[in-house]
Length: 341
Image (cartoon, rainbow, N blue to C red; front, side, top):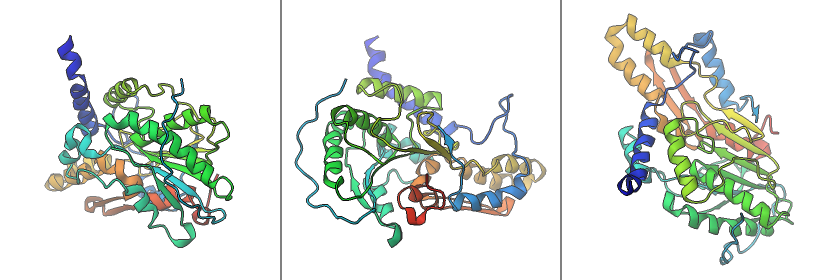
């Protein structure tokens, strides 16, 4: 039994890899088979334009005392109305089962620790924000240390900017969103006066959709004493969750105020390609490559800040989604928004 217990993390990591590489994309019928969306050939191009425009519909949806940390904010930039955005990165890909998922899918093993503030820095001047990166080791092993650091840091951010008229947002990706869900609840108990205007979660396994990812998430949540029940923190005014069905690490979160599914209007080009391969066996090799590109779960997991591109010559289509500006940035800066809640 002790040997099995000691190997549990490795076994769960193996399941994690399996889920990432085999998670099906698109919608499933009652029989479990993928079915094409209605009028996919005519509707997908228009749908991609809707996605780029940021007009996806939204579907409603015991405290530990912090340890003292030195002040990391020297001065407050008092730019009225400009958001202050706390960013929290997810696990480094090289630390998820040794980077085997990304290596198997032909992607760089991991993004730099500053990938979220770096992306925010590319916003146009009218959408400029002040990014406050919360840095951590980006490993499961650093989860507990990150919690103890982030609680006082978030309180300090709020206290620094509370009289400036600037809203405070939290933008968290993947496991970083799991961390901040717990941090926000702890801060709400310690300092009920702290208010976070928007909590934006992207590609997070807070509510696992794939069984294997649920196993590894549940194990790590229990191992580090995180909250098992997902609920909206009392200090969050608005919670927006962004996910994709082709990203097995993400899911809709019922506790969020709204959920946006990035690939909701893409239809099922994978199905169209598989049907085409039957009638055009001479294109089968190329078609299989295009299907693999569409089903690249790791690329979709990074699409929230990297965007998603796929060339589909067999269907005479090009998919180029600037997901960040269209779906994340409108929640950060009103000047870029068409439909901001």
